[in-house]
Amino acid sequence: MPIDKHFRSDLDLAKIDWTKVDATSDAEIQAQVDADEDTAPIFSAQDLAAAARIVQPPTAEDVRLLRLRLGLTQEAFAARYGFSVHAVRQYETARRVPNGPVRTLLRVIAQEPDAVTRALARSARLNESDSKPSTHK
Image 1: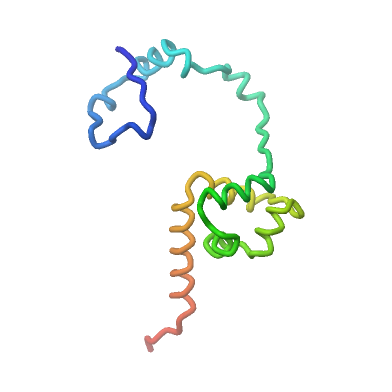
Image 2: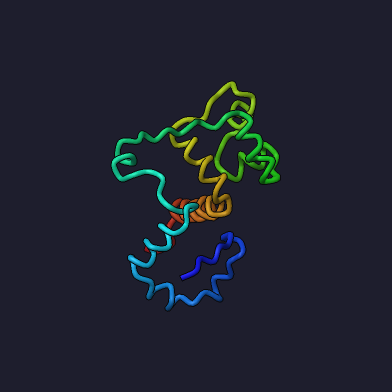
């Protein structure tokens, strides 16, 4: 079976023949992977098990570039994603380094900013409804 290379952005998921995709066996998928050196696994299962995961913390420039990529001011970035403006300024001037959950949140914002915005808005709506006094007696 020939391999048809596409970028994810080129694909129109509505035009994919999902019955053909679902009918592809694991052996056929493995044969396609083995035939294409660009997608063939580089590491053995033993290599992967022995590998340590190293995550570099975002640098000041990363936080600034992320904010600029999203077209947001420091104030708007802070308000949208739940940071204080002071913290954003500290990250961007390297006086403070994001760690732990903040680093994870920044990575998620970099990949899926709209998903984070939706999740935080939904959370805010739920908190608002929880804090309203009940009118039921």
